[in-house]
Length: 125
Image (cartoon, rainbow, N blue to C red; front, top):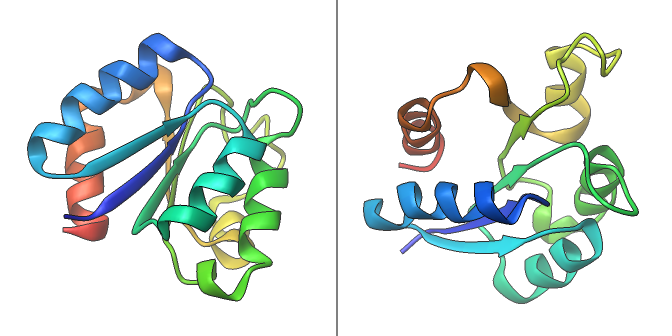
C-alpha cells in the first residue's frame, strides 16, 4: 500500500480528500501543518506528498525546501493542491518542479475530486 502524506490545514477538506483516496488503496496520513508534516515524513517515508501552500506557522514552500533538504526525501513526488493561484505565488510551475520536485500544481477552486484522484494515480499508480 502506498503512503500519501496530505498536508491540509482545513480539517473538513482533509477528511474529504482522505475519503476519496483511501478507498483507492492509498494509506493517507493527514497533517495540518509543516512541523507535523516533517515528523510524519520522518516516520513514514511517504510515496507522495500533497501539500497546501497556505499553512499555519510555515508556508508550504518553506516546508518543501526543508523536506527536500533531507536526502531520503529528495525523490518523493509532490502535488501542490492549493488556494494560492500560481500567478500569486510569483513563480512558475517549472521553477517549482526544478527546485522542489512539484510534479503537479492543482488550484483548489478548479480541481474536482475525480481529477485529484486521477492525478495521484498518474503520479504513483
